[in-house]
Length: 77
Image (cartoon, rainbow, N blue to C red; front, side):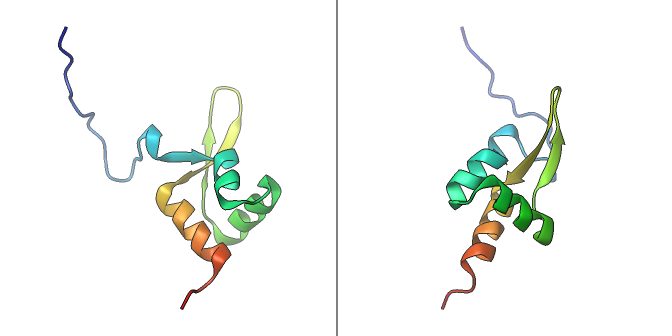
């Protein structure tokens, strides 16, 4: 059986599910407790709340995760 590799009609502002990092994974990757990650997100405005069927969760795009990393590490020379 052959499958079609059609791409969905997606705008550039709409990341696909693979491009979304949830709060737990982001905290793990950045080496931070979730509480500290939330604090940094509140101050920086990075991340967005995603409303699911059972809960609201904080998610990040790869770009936001990169920006968080740069914020935490600080300027490098």
